[in-house]
Image (tube, rainbow, N blue to C red):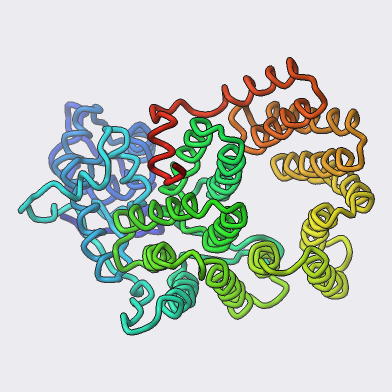
Length: 506
C-alpha cells in the first residue's frame, strides 16, 4: 500500500492531469496511482464527496460499486465490524485492569470508546456480555491501540481505606489533567472532558435530582415510585463513567452526602456499588473511579459523613492546585465543598463561607463577572436554607432579572426557573401560599416547555406542588398534579416488594 500523505499533499494534488482509459473508466493503473489520495480523502469525506472531488479535479471516472470494491480491498471500509468492536472492548478491559489508559484506531482512524458502547447497545448486547464471551481469536489487523500515560497508579493495599481513597482522588485528578482528558480553554468557563462531545453535565444533574427525589418518595412511603426513580437515576451512571467530566467526583460526593443526610444509606450504597461494578467493566478494575467508589462502599455508616467530607475537600484542593483559585472549575469545586462537605456546620456558617468567597470574587473579578454571580446564586440558597426568606426572595428576583440577559438558552432557563423556585419556596414559608403556588407553576411550565416532559427538576417541583396542595386541602388538584408527575417516571417492572427488599427498607 502507498505511504500515507498529509493534507498539504492532498491540496497539491488537486490539479493533476486527468487520466482515464479509452473507455472513459479508471484503469488499474489509475486506481494504483490515486490510491493514497482517495484513501486520504475518504478519511474525512463521504464516498459521494470523494467521487465528486475525483471526477471534477482529476477526471477520475468510476462507479460507486467500483469505489466500494477498491475501498474494501484497501482496508478503508468505515463500517464497524463486530470482531473489531469486540476486540476493542476486551483489550480495553485487559489493559484497564492493569491501570493503563488506552486509545484505539481502526483502519488508522481514532475510535471513541463511547461509539463502541453504542455499537453494542444498538445490537442489544451488554458490554459485560461481550467481555464474558470466550475467544482465542487474535486482534484484527485493522485494530491497533496505544497507551498514553498510565492511568493513576493503584494505591498500596497496606493503606487504610480513607488513605487509599484520598490518594486515588489526587492521582485521578493529576492523571486526568496530564493525559489531556480534562482541558481548560477559558478560565471563565468550566473545565471540560475530551472523551465525549455531548453534554455530560445533564447526566450528573439527573443523577443528583432523581436520587434526591427517590429519597423524598421513600420518606412518603411511595416505594414503587421511589424505586422507579432510583432505577432511572442509576441508569445515568454508564454515561457519567464514559464521559469522566471534571465535576463527576464532587457531584457524586455531594449527592451521596445529601442522600446520607436524609438517612437513606442503603440508596447511597446502591449507587456506589453500581458505579463500582460498571467502572470495572467500562474503564477497568484498576481505574481510580472504580477504586474510589468500591472503597467508599466498604465504609461503615458511622464513618461515611466524615470521609465524604474529606474526599470533597481533597478534590477541591486538586482543582485549585492545577488551575488556580479564580478558575471557574475551582470556584465551582469550592461551592460543592461548602454545600456537601461541612455536614456538621449550621447554615449561618456555610453562608458566611460563601460571603467570604463572594467578596474575594468581587475584589478580583468584578461584580459583573459570571463567576462572581455563580457564587451569589449559591448564597441565595443558603439564605433560604437558614430561613432568611425575605433576603432569599430579594436575591431570587435578582436571579430572575439576570437570567433574562443571558445568551445561552439552557443556562437562562436554569437560572430563571431556579430563581422562581427560590421565590416560591420562600413565599410559601412566609405563608404567602397563593403567590408561591403561582410562581412554582410558572417555573414548572417553563421547564416543561423549554426542556421537555421528562425534565427532572420539573418533576421535583411537581412533587413539591402536590405536597403544598394537600396541605391546603385541595385534594382534587393535588391528585391531578400527582398523576402529572407519575406519568413522567419511566416504566419499571420492579414491584414495590422487590424494591423494598433490594434496598433493605423492610
